Amino acid sequence: MFAALRATCTSVYLCEYHGKAEDEDKRVEPKRLDRWLDKVVSLAGSQTVFGLILAGLVGWALLGIKFSSSEKWPALISDIQAVLCYVFDSLLMRQQSNGYRWTMERVIRLKSRAASHQIMLERLELKVHPVDLELPQETRFGRFVTRCALVMGHIITIMLYWVAIGVWLGFGPKNSWSAQWLLDINSATSALMVLLFAFLANIRQRHAAYEEVCVKALEEMDEALDRRLREMTGYTDPSPEITILPPPTNVVQKIIYYYAEVVGALIGIASLIIVLIVWVAMGPVVKFSSGWWLFIGTYAGLVGMVDGFVLRNVQGQLQSHEEGQLGEIARMDRQMLARVGWEVAQERSPGRMARMSLAINRVCATQLMVVGGFITTLGLIIVSSVMRWNLVGQLLSNVPPSLIESFFMLILITGHNEAEARGRRALREMYEGRAVLSEGVKRLSDPKERSE
Image 1: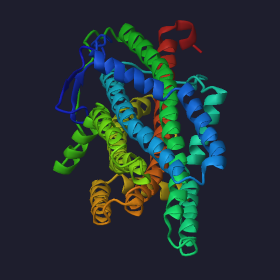
Image 2: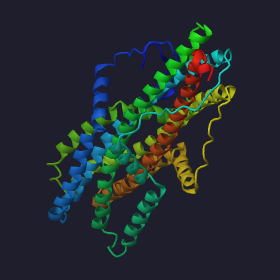
Image 3: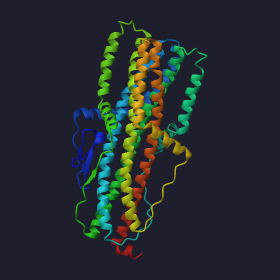
Image 4: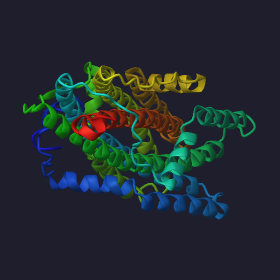
């Protein structure tokens, strides 16, 4: 964050931000561990890692032709998936918090400068005209990946997922509810989860890079408008300092935020490493049984399920707060544009499918869902403990978390898509509004254009 932007908080999610437009954009040098973690987050969202994971999934499918009859094969795949997803949980949490901080920094500047623009525009009589200027376009491949995200996060895709689970349940009686029947769905959802985690990390990073390009263009337009307005009006006062309060919270939400910050700091991964060491040491003692192979996947899967609930909750809370701040800038923009006679186009009402998707997203982001996920996890642990953590007992603590976490990953993609669409629309409207005002000020300052 830039140095003059002060943040008062005990958690990144509960920060009170202060700053103004004139503050220098100098970043405080992060600690070595933070720099390393951010590099790992960037690597995890890269095209290279996504390509490697796709290749790994194809290799897993091909090797499964030969080794699928072995009990240890699906257990091994489950372990690899659970550990990978556990790590991705932490990286996605940190990626999310980094994006939130970055957005708050930009909002501070835009709100501060918009407050000055309102004062200066009251001193001028502008005539505005349409301007043929647009934000930079996403690359062709970027647009293709965005369409893939829209398909994966569509409400119909989510429905088809549960239809597939229903079909699997329908085969339960025919397979006598056997361990192999459980292992089959566990393998399928393991592959799906790895794909979804890697895809979400990649699409978030890709969209963040595109958003940064758009915000840079917006800030350049905003600064140009500010200079012209100051030249025309002789206004010399600095832009006012802006304070952004943290989102409203209660005790439960604060606990969720603190847990999310711990996960994003990779303390969770450190605990996983400790468990891995103990697990490996226990292998010879239990003669590397099928239950031993499943154990690490069970542990990571149970924790990962809780992380999935937390990820969606935090995503929903932060997106709501960001949209509220962007909404305040939009309101200030509409007031400025209305004063010069420019009407902002009204947003279209969402269709039926979009409303269904929004409703599901809101429900999945509630604190009640996080609490319910935690209680479900405890219930699964109790049931498996009663069964003495035998093969079926471990599968009961492995399969339901896998099904639930896969669903929540689809919901996370849906939530990301909706927030991305709203964010792009807000950026486009802010850019177009400033382009119109900037052109109006330019015409007013140029005698030749003013006479036209």
